Length: 155
Image (cartoon, rainbow, N blue to C red; front, side, top):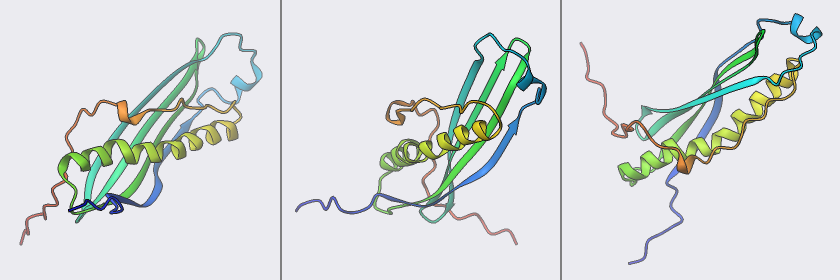
């Protein structure tokens, strides 16, 4: 018996900005000062997955970018970029964990990266280009609940 490799393991149904915050607390003053030091950028991200229905999951990349100099913060960005993902019912838990925390984030990240670059550019700063991330090498620190359990009826 041969295995059919054409069966989809998952499908990204849609993707969307769930939350976005941009703060430039020293604007417009910062645009008129001569800055001779290189800004210090701090970048972080978190990946989460949550059940959203039978074989449906929301996958979220939460990015933070803080760019500052000695005199203060140039800008601070928080972006939650999400997608709804349908998983094949035939997948095992290991496949689902890999899909939800590695494959889907790898697909979503370029879109989130573009949003950050566009947002900084449109806010009067040079575009901030996030470095690519190899999600296949990102350590998974949480288990994914891929069991589709229905909530108990409370009457």
